[in-house]
Image 1 (cartoon, rainbow, N blue to C red):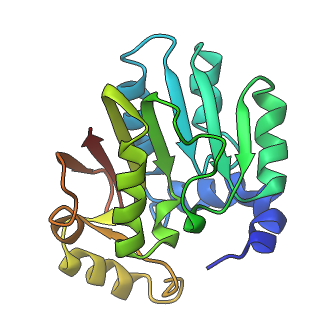
Image 2 (image 1 turned 120 degrees about the vertical axis):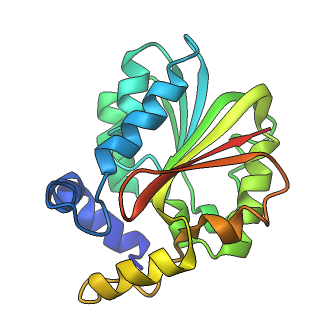
Length: 206
């Protein structure tokens, strides 16, 4: 798993790395654009909404929502990625924070129409994921939703197939979503849409 310093060093080349993996339909970013498009289209159902982005990176998705008039709060632990994202979203409220410590004080008590997170939560164990998602639910407006796009699989069997096919590149320090396992731990409505062989979107209601 990349450290804080690792993400800062990777920031300038991050989007290029993602694109290469995506174009070749390879783990870990196969289906990346489709995952982001699904979330974008869902969030765009509301106009001028308030959005929280967890792990926004260089702002690939968030900047499109920002350009469409949405109000953006964001959390990321890479100062370099925040600098890149802030340059294209000057009025966004972007906070440097490590989500393994929970939620930053700056957003506790706020309410959002949508909370989004793409390719960030796999750094948390399943137990931590469930706890963190529960804390995010408290930030939703009454009809709000959480949209999570990440490396994810319908079953443990599918994960193991992907691991075998990608053994040279597989990261054993990361904790990928398995729908059949994590859905039983979430105490709320949860949809899952498999987008590629290693990527999918969760939609979680309040």
